Image (cartoon, rainbow, N blue to C red; front, side, top):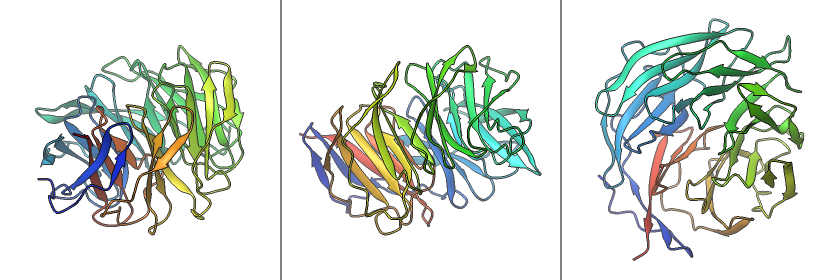
Length: 350
């Protein structure tokens, strides 16, 4: 149930408020999360995390928040997955893992009524420490990022038939260590961040990456497009703490007004635009100021919302530590300290 003792903490001029925080899930996931995703229907939340069973799923509703925990998969991941994602139709949960020097991609069939189903895997040859993962908007391909110090091809595109993996293809980068990846909303571009990379955005068609557009050169761990696809934000713990730029099919446009994050001396770990395109959430590499949420005005940052009474208990996890529900009426943040998870309601003003 929702914790009724928490109060509203910030009103947004467009008729929304961040409301009460939900009670944490019970039982909690095993250890520090590595990724979080809502199901496309918004009726479940899945975490990957540091300790066995390494992946956990809970029922979800806007009214009550976290519900019952689903039974663990029959075949567990061997280690903590790097990141996870749902296919757009919600039929499968995919994730990456690195075990004994070998990287692989796995997929569990999924149903909100029965939970985890059968599992299949495909080997990602040459990739180490796979982290980033994102399914394309069409559901036909999966982008994976990791480390490749030998051939400098740390990005893989894996076909997905809807029920099975195809043969992975590997693509070059100017860094051997890529972190998080995402598709543009129209599926025509793949954005990649990594060590000393800034952000590279590759044209994408029929499973092939083209010559990338590049911006910045600092260490970056997180990236997201606005829902309309007209802007892209990226950041990390290095020199590129946070950048926001206009985006079109012609590449990067001008840099857009962004918040002053100079006080976040340890950088930004996660960023996420809300699906309604009216909020930008920033998860910091700091236990003192782990979360900031701003109005997004379409062409730049608006006011910062007042901090909630209950902030995340530690620095927000790197990569994809923030997730909005598909309808935009809730936000969940994963941190590096117990209870690891804090969830907030987003409601319409009455």
